[in-house]
Length: 437
Image 1 (tube, one colour):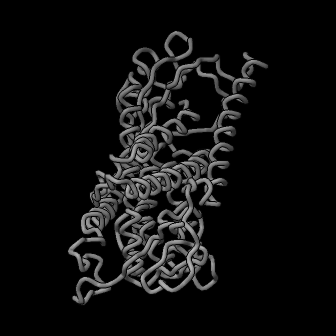
Image 2 (cartoon, rainbow, N blue to C red):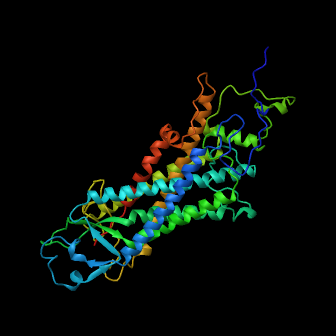
Image 3 (cartoon, rainbow, N blue to C red):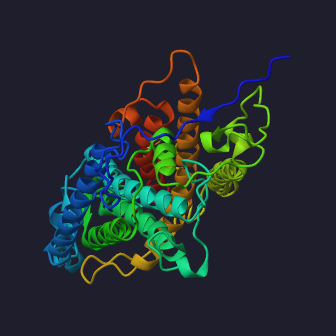
């Protein structure tokens, strides 16, 4: 019987032109830029723009923190309260800027746009950090897949201070969480508790807060510094996210060796007995041991958030007229009737907000779990993209090669959906909390 075909990788060089290993923009022997010039340049530009954006946020935050104004100009509804001579109304406030009186929708749109901008910059920084992590893992013989499904890598003690070691990776996760927490708090809708007729007020305005803006700028700036540190400390094999470019870069660097029991081999391993190829290619679920834990974690987070909403609804049904429970509403954008449990915190616009630690703690807890969940979802989306590309490449029609990072995202439905969903999901986390003035 004829033997089953085996896959052979021919590593015979096509050209002996020297390669400068220090430059990630060098071209390979076949004039194919497997180092991906476009992705490298776009990533560096994205990091540079994120630094500019962070500096703007810090300057704006300092300006807002030093700003003073009258609370009755915008926040209070027109009428008796705004015209009152009470000291709490006429005393100037500081640390915030009130604008957009009497509306809520433009405030939510501005906040969502800010979250989207933050998502773009953090994605650029995260891309640089992930590329350097992939190259570092490959250099240490720990890169098993093009997408690294492990949340923490390079756990050996000598790598702890590495830009992709546990300390920097933990710092990146904490800074990413704080950046989204602060971006959700930079522009917030506020509801006046005072009304002219004594009923529940429906007068909303917008606030630009100084402390969250400063924190947003600092966290993004620190993330950019870690990304720059990674670029300077790691010899990047390729900027491309394509599994083919990664495999080719590792082959050229001598970082891929044959695994016993596998049918794929190089020309050098021609005399070694080979295992027959599998008739069925296993799925990512079967190949990646960590993928199962990632999927389980995503489902646990979904159940936890559903339980959170169910707990709030249960509080309302048990005691609908309780002092810390609102009247009840199913509107997506919170209002004065939304199902909620009220946790009062003193907000003094004259001496500054004394409740910032508690506020940031609540938001960091919510955004932290969302950050982990979205990171797990992104790992799964990237693994699906890699698997699909390999499978398409084995068909008779093949797979068209493109190193354009924008086309790479637009051409992958899971990645495109996730990119759009990230700011929306993070904004939804903000809806879990509300400020009452």
